[in-house]
Image (cartoon, rainbow, N blue to C red; front, side, top):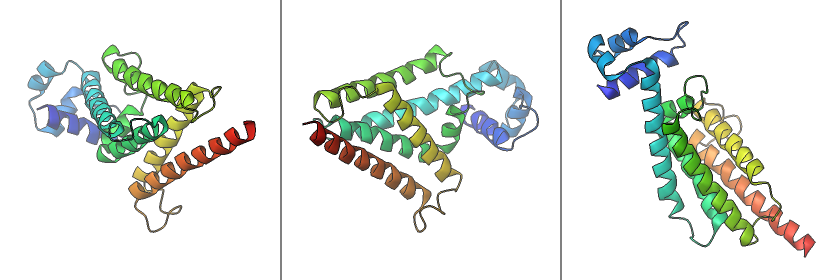
Length: 203
């Protein structure tokens, strides 16, 4: 039941209905008995939060698997691996990606069950950035928060453009998935080169 009800809600949201679907509409689309659905889900928000948690679990697991494959002594490479893992997750789970970016549907910070995944990812990225500073890979005075915000904006924008089919005009001959990864890899390489030059100047 969970899968069919969740998929029904995502389909109804995607159709841009003028009014938000209620549990009755979702049950009807899912081919489930409305009373049975109400016994499992107390509200539409319960379904949204369940979907959000499923998406965050997939994202968290994907990031951890990917970062462990990066060189253990290269925090910048590990940081980049997290970005690549995010893009992979977005392409593998486009509906959950869109849901998690919609602040009006899911309150990631206000729901403690969801917020813990966000905090875990945030803490991991901060640890990697601090490790990169210790190794001299990024400047000591680099603003960790600014780096995280810029990285999130970049990854979200790349995933959204690619999933919406807006990458073709920029990278003809590549799929949206290929183009998004290429742009992110170029970004990481550019940042690495810029830091090498900055370090050389200050030496």
